[in-house]
Length: 136
Length: 163
Image (cartoon, rainbow over all chains, first blue to last red; front, side, top):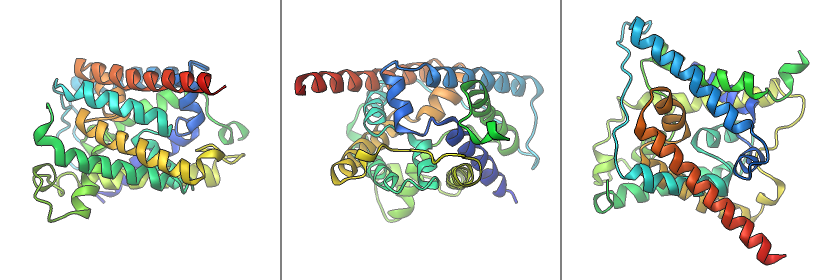
């Protein structure tokens, strides 16, 4: 039961991602070529609603249905934000897919997303291997 | 009913995506993020790895992430099977080839490597981090777009050179 909630929230997220079409290659290309504003508006409005959620949680300090405290984690500053972020951006353009949509594509029956996921896992492993030698 | 079966407009889907931040925090007690699931998967596939990044990863505490991404798979399946009038074209036809597969593996490598180095992706930094007004997440998001726009520029130049 405790874990079922993550399946349900993930299901909600996957459903909305696919219905918004942010999981499609052509939407990502349209964003990077400035052909349509949709993706910018989707991210922008998502952040507005997300920020309202965070604001309310900070004020109301709710607990989860299982009594756990709700901790909003800070994102520390480090150099990888820039280096890694840039590399991810390149991959985002090439594959037309970011991590959430990889899973959404798999669920939607896009078999070739297996290759994207495979590449991503090799990439994550390469990071694990190189991490001690990379700037943090 | 018909409007449900069409692609949802940005003013519906954007706020609903943002709501995931609140749902996951209030119901699950966790911060939205997807790319860390790659770390889970690597640690599971290579349980004997001595690389600190994998060996020191607490799979139990982070287990919810895999359940969450399994949900994404299921949710998208439901969207395509029961909530779409037309088939969703995830990747264009020309990606369904050997060269397309190579592009996806190479691009996927950058996605996996880059998001782990940046410690977050579009979900964790652009949505969760920006919702939490984190300056670091703003830098990350700008870096994502710098990379994507640089690739777009290179692609346009190559097309121009080819034509």
